Length: 176
Image (tube, rainbow, N blue to C red; front, side, top):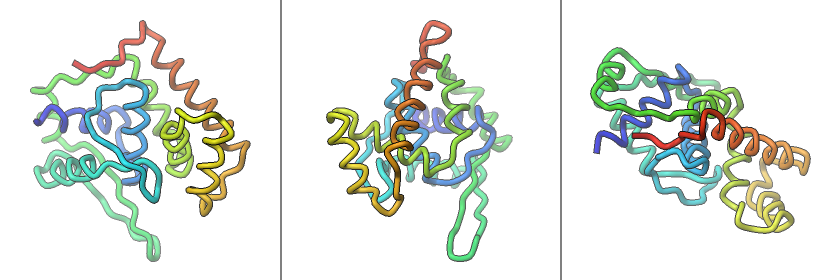
């Protein structure tokens, strides 16, 4: 059970800090599509793919004192930042998690904002569809985000960039 928690802790350790619950959700979803060994199940939700399991797991990690969660208020919007504390570092000493070449993909994802990662995860969610149909789903379900076709193409290029990063160093992306 705690091995699933360790994977989330390790992701946060790699990047140092994740700004936003939505961003963390999208990073794990994209990582899962890149064949990183994440276990969370996802459903399509208002902000794209969403995992209630991941939300609960992060809450548990915070309640166990393994992750630090800081909330910042910007008017009516609350932003959460997640970072690893010393107890979390100690916990990882007993749970080996190796993302292999996936670490570079995780670092690269963290460079992007949550809006873009929301688009990328939505592209992946509908990736089984032909391009025009996938694009139509994005324009329909994400109309409030006002994504452009240029952004969709940028999102697809980003997915290919991440896949290339995963293939470097032999493509060892599965965790132990």
